[in-house]
Length: 143
Image (cartoon, rainbow, N blue to C red; front, side, top):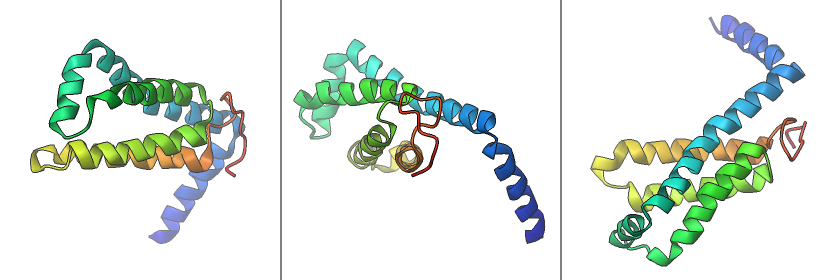
């Protein structure tokens, strides 16, 4: 049985090793991962006072909201375009973990907590592997 999985994984590895395929998949990954940050950052602009109140209720100073918006919106755009992908991936991963612990630690927030941890994992992958060839970083190697 494990031989079948080795063959399937080997086939996938060969497929994604093709430059056009790997480049397209990394571009798609950046686009999909960036969307939530861009939308969330933009949304905070439209509900600035409400977001500050939500932050204050969780014990986070509302004065930090401009930094949050800059990280979500700016970081999301940087991720989308593959600019400083490793740095942005690391910063967004730390942000996701912090927000999971601060805002989503209750029982009613379990799925949101896990969502943030999953997003952190994806951001750590960008930290390790970079933005790929079709990025402003123009990376074609994993390290």
